[in-house]
Image 1 (cartoon, rainbow, N blue to C red):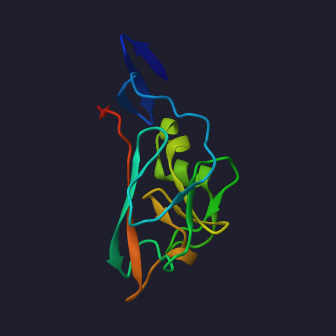
Image 2: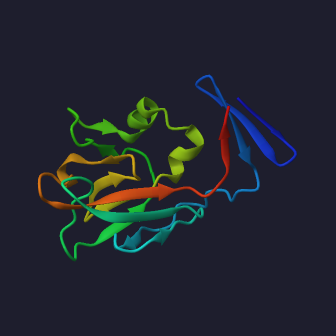
Length: 150
């Protein structure tokens, strides 16, 4: 359910009400993949920011010099979050995680080569999860619009 009024949008999702500023930019059509180095901050097309900090034994494991690409959902993507049994579609993971529908197309997908390695700061896919004393990157995805939950 959604009601728009005077520059604001009231939305209901899973028995919660959200108040969103309608002055926010719409998510543009998905751009081509964006090259990214995790030691830099990346401003995404909708104004959100993707950044990372180095950690040990957790986060996204990236080989030095390995190219990363950032893109957005096209449909059919799958991830096996580290520590979980089995792979799931992002659609199912987003529903299980209860991620609001208006955010799902905005989540940055991080690829190593042609393989999905991480889904925003929500999940690192198991094959790319740092463990033990391996260096990793803790991802941080910050969307830049106001959202109030009631």
